[in-house]
Image (cartoon, rainbow, N blue to C red):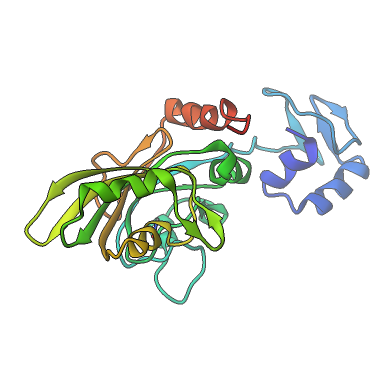
Length: 242
Ligand code: URA
């Protein structure tokens, strides 16, 4: 990590402020004065400011939240937001949700402070799969499933081919599983509306390699190191546009 970033992440000021400290010669690395803000701090090196050790800033954090219905996927809103669940997490103000679920939708939401990975995961070029359980009113006919593979024109652009299958037929509704490879505004609802169906329940159960699993609404957990690794690989292996 660059020295200026190291100091900023340790909470010693903005990047601009800490650069000044470095240029003034107030910072040492392993006992040597360093005046280059771009100096690469390696793990284990000891950084001091005015002779005082600077604690190593923590790396990015990754949480998986079961977003309940009724919460807005945003960091700021007049309505309750998903960030309310993270109130007691240190440096919660740095966290943000990756992508969006509608206020009346529920399920898996990744929350992190890793802006770079978030940006990649959301980029349509990486085709990160998002799996939804969708309940629609009425009986959904098998032959209409094809429409998801063919795509829909939304806002003048065709959607990427999606996967769709029927999971359950009820008396008054149908439960489907839809897999999208991009995330457009109200995408599922608009696709079904185009086919003449109303979505009455929407839950995301998978995002890339992450599964909602046994979390309950409002619960969150840290991702395991393996999950973080797999998330990173999701965007590393699909770097070439397909
Ligand atoms: N599609 C929708 O319509 N809403 C969501 O929240 C997610 C996908």
